[in-house]
Image 1: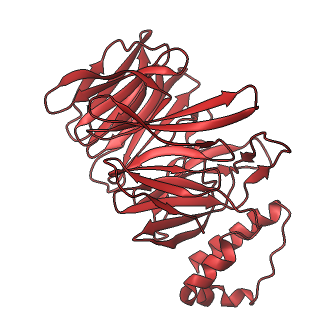
Image 2: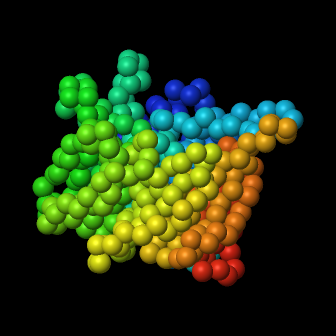
Length: 382
């Protein structure tokens, strides 16, 4: 009956947004309904408010895409050519889907969290930020569970750890059975990275720093950008041996760099002026660093050993419209524009999933483009 209890809690959340849902069976029939009507669950819960929510990309690889939709997002449509906006919901609930071999499947219904704020999955586990104490000053906890609705594990709970710790606005990282998040300590006015091994094979790690910019997990590695002694650094840490390598001791950036971690490479971008930045790559096996692209446009959105992706927001003062430009850079640093579209709602979200670039268009489609070129895949979230 655990799922029934969870569902009952979700109905409380749904009720808080002022909606009414006619349930076609008595409460005693919930468990049986969920057990035998998977397709009915998807039809019933995928968009109860007829809001046509945007998909939020939360993970994937060369074979599958994981995405979520938050059912209580608020969309604002303006007259004229001005971009439409979406106000993402912190509360949720959200549905988690898998797209594979041309088919989508509902993996998890009604997760009690907003999809756009910190939700991520590696296919085995799903992590998300959950908001509590809505009637008072809200707090934000980080929860991890198995995708198949397993037991929850709270990896950060401000109510249990005291008011001096809080989660920052940095994304939660999840990969290969590990989750990492950035916390802020009001007592020391510093950041810390918490790394939790969900398999239980290694103890929890706490890495303190003056200020953390971004984090990335891959395999047994953690990469992060930090400010230490007034300098912006890029650091690589082996989570098995705890060996630490300072990849860049004085990154040429006012703020911590944006970091990506691939099979063999740490990739980071040092922001420059007018949206132009320098992208560097540290080869882990050879411990060598090279300038991959001296003048890349936009923000670093993803990387492999041989490609990286940027996403640029371009505002036109004459038309009052903002557009998104996505570019792929090859191993020599040469750029190719993959797409350009309006920056409506939650459009963009560019990232690399396996051997494909992925993004969400203004009309809510998910696009998958092979990095090496070739036919693209396009699908709608529901």
